[in-house]
Length: 306
View 1: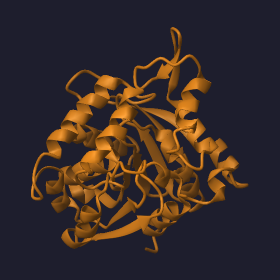
View 2: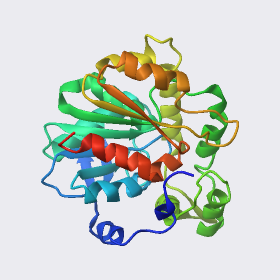
View 3: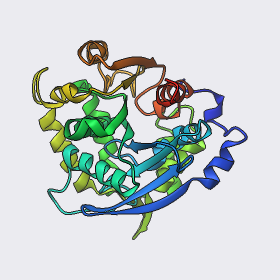
């Protein structure tokens, strides 16, 4: 499966990185974002943008490895997710999340920066390029650049359905995912990821992420994916003038559920975007986040000697 045996057990050295990784809040005009920094503060900034229902802890595996490579990586909880603010109706959508990225960079005194976006986070990264490509040094799109296979609607819907649901205990919540067969091999990365998003509520625990915020982004994405090859999400490709790395997971999330990044879009993306390189990763849409091959490809792409 994706990654190597190191997914199931942390290698010596990463525990130290994990202890020194710093969580902090960023107050923006649009709302407060929660963030986590890996690596040295005096190197060029790379921001991590999670997917639709995801949180910053999904970048833990990658953040540890970027830190060892001397790269400053700041992973974010988007508004409405995990430990960031839930803001008013109408404040979401790819374009508004993209504007937050520039505000975060301003807060961190970065005139230029790079982006790593996973799933919907990749769409947000492309929307950022459409807003101000000159400020983006490099962009990594992880398993998304266009319209997903229609058959992926079911697993995406299942991910959204957990939001607002009360579970009797943390263990009951973890068991739902531990035994799903999607995150294989299961590791403490996944356990930490799901624990991070929980909060105590009457009757047990529930995810902090706002279902209403996620649904607003779902509707924005549906609109962006309703166009042909020249508009909507595909219209964002024209703004990608900087070096771009596209990673595609070659395994379905669950057998028969299709791909978020279709083979068709993977093949035509580097043809249409001259600055892009596409790399296949032996993982699914989720386990690509704990893949040594994916982490290595991203580090090679981001290193100054590239």
